[in-house]
Image (cartoon, rainbow, N blue to C red; front, side, top):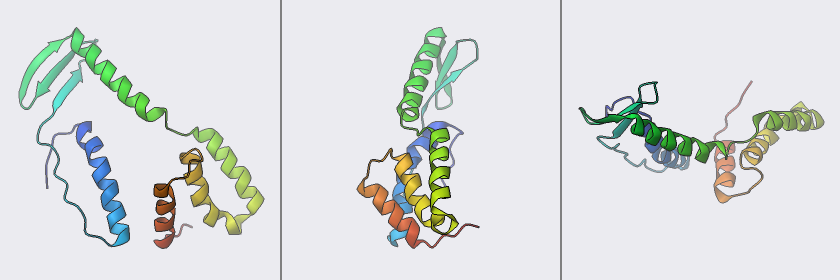
Amino acid sequence: GHPRPKAGVFAVRAGPPLVENLRRAFRGQPLVTYTPQSSFLGLISTGDKHAVASRGSFVCLRGDWLWTVKDYIDRTWMAKYSSELPDVETMMKQMQKESAKRGAREESEASLEETVNHLTKGRKSAEAEEAIALLRSAGMRCG
């Protein structure tokens, strides 16, 4: 229970503690309590290259220049994440080719590691190896 307004900042900030608690849950460790921030600066576009800024229940600023600030923040944030995304079409084609070569029997065991390899662009890390081991130990089955 920490009710908050519908704002993306709360979801974005909750991501890292969620990942940590998922790791802890898989390891059987106690979860860490997360308390979200109580307020935030909202920049809301009105659709005409104009924006308003608010904090709490007060509208503090408005203007075209705020839209420029919001647009810059949004584009910078999206670029940070979109540059790390895998090319999904290429990834799927490669996985289909590799699956056809191996056959259905080996497909489920190797697909987890292939997916991680594609998502990490082949960069091995301790976190990726740990994630694979934890998911394999969870005994999940599909189909």
